[in-house]
Amino acid sequence: MTIQLLDLEGTAYQRGQKHGQELAKNVQSNIKTYRDRFMMGGASQERIDEEATAWADRLQSHDAEYFEEMQGIADGSNTDIKDIALLNARYEISYSLYTQEAAAANDMPMHEPDGCTAFGILPEYSANGHTLLGQNWDWLNGLLGNLCLLRQRSDEHPDHILLTQAGIVSGMIGFNEHGIGLCVNGLSSKADGKELHHRPFHMRVRDIMRSKTYFDALKVIFGTDRVCSTNWLIGQKGGEILDIESSPNVAHTLYPENGLITHGNHFINRDGIETEYERIAPCSLYRTPRLDRLIRQNSQKWDIEHLKGCLKDRFGDPKAICRYPNPEDPNAAKTVTVTGLIMDLDELTIELTDGPPDQNEFVKYSLRG
Image (cartoon, rainbow, N blue to C red; front, side, top):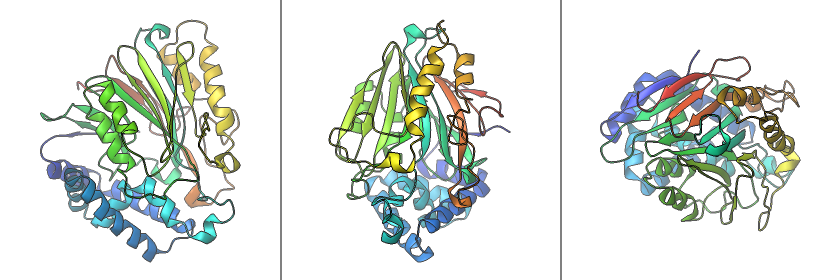
């Protein structure tokens, strides 16, 4: 199978309506996946509805155009707007949906944020002389088959490609026509979810995709405080890559060493950060340096095929770079590598898999079509 590609243009509502109509079953499946996950964390259906409705209002107040596209998805997929809000604020909303009882054991939300292991390579170290970003994106098993690529063309904003979950206006990973690219890793800190009025994660991703310069893209991350912790691996063709570890009110920058940077789901620079993430997901502590070492084992300049092989690594199975569900985890919490991907920011292409990369083919897509 391959991840579906949607070409979107027109008004915000028209884009959303097409998204909802063509991916209606996928949207509904993703809503169920997140509802099940939140309920496993201790939330009732009533509490989920209450938080989703509150976030619908917040999203509308932050960005009327974004909300209009959400409404198009809701109408196109015949779903309630609060459920589309649940998806679009799924990163932030998790921190308020777990009950105090569910969170008490570790004094933090009892869940792993979106997992992944990411890399960035500067052009002087790549075989084709291009700037490369890539990662495995690990998250809920129920999302398998329910991702899509949005290729959006506009006269008002830069054209871009975004990997997203059906029902979400923006996405997680992508690049635009100016060669600005983004990978993300979930992080967790004790400050997450305490200030809910800041611009949410998925809106910031789209703001980055709409940036014309690297400066503008970085400003999206640094310009205001955030609701939740995130690692942003951001690059641009021509050879610049930065890694930004952000908590709600602290951000640190990491730089490539000898042409390469890798990152997982733990803070490397913990100055001003309170985190106990390693207590619930210590696998990040070995995935991050292992991917670095695997890539560097090839003494030549690193090519795409070598990088694909590195993303297939199963050391530490099932909590590996290429992840499979742990049979001991509850069904609603099982995680898997939903996709593996590599982006060429000079060529403006992305190659990605529909499922774990060791068993699924990489398929190539171009922004140019």
